[in-house]
Amino acid sequence: DPHTESILQFLLALDTKSQSMAFLDLVFQGLTESKITKPLDWLGNGISFYADDSVFWETLLEIMETADLDTEKTGELLEEKLKELHPQKNSREALMEELALAINVKVKDGRKLKTFVAGLKKYILKETPPDEIRWLIKEHKGEKYECVFVEIEEEAEENWKLPIYYYASPDLLTFTVSRKMMHSVIERSLANRGNKIGPIKGRQFPKDSSIAFRFRQNAL
Image 1 (cartoon, helix red, strand yellow):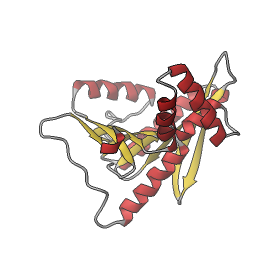
Image 2 (cartoon, helix red, strand yellow):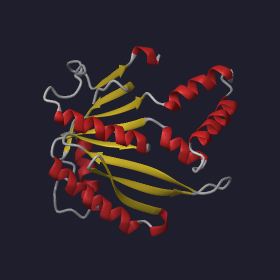
Image 3 (spheres, helix red, strand yellow):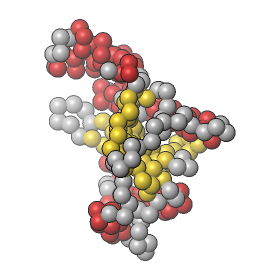
Image 4 (cartoon, helix red, strand yellow):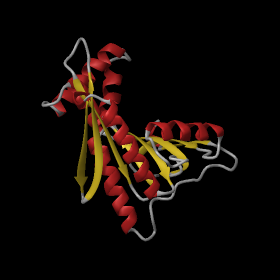
């Protein structure tokens, strides 16, 4: 999913016919109580981790320059800035909102993906106490996506809810902890579908390679 907002991307090729994938098929078949022998058959040939340009990274770099690389001081100043941006949220929830990180998983069969997600969702809701997790369906620009709120307990601070957003476009399954980033993902997917020339073209994996990096020059 190459796009102009991305400052760094790490891509990893997947061998869906490997022994490791066969083992994972057995694991998920048991968890989802599926009669399908290959519940991960929806999975495509790659996964990517990427960071987008955002207020979070800009603020972090500014603070690091003035904090003389003092980790504790940097963390405190960043927490203060995030609280200014999101006064109604606690520090952890404010961080999640601005943390512009996401994971893309290549999808080769959307129908099989829906079956897999439905089975996994049923298992998680069955095995998890209701007060520890909430599963919501949300919408942006007419596109539905889902969010799982996981209750996180901390001794020193009040409990907070970790959001995990995910969205399935025709060829990608995207995960992120940032609602703002999820909305950008959906808008980009809609734009690509409406654009006859398709998404921005990025370089493909080098021949015989399974790992690649892509980054914007001014991100360094």
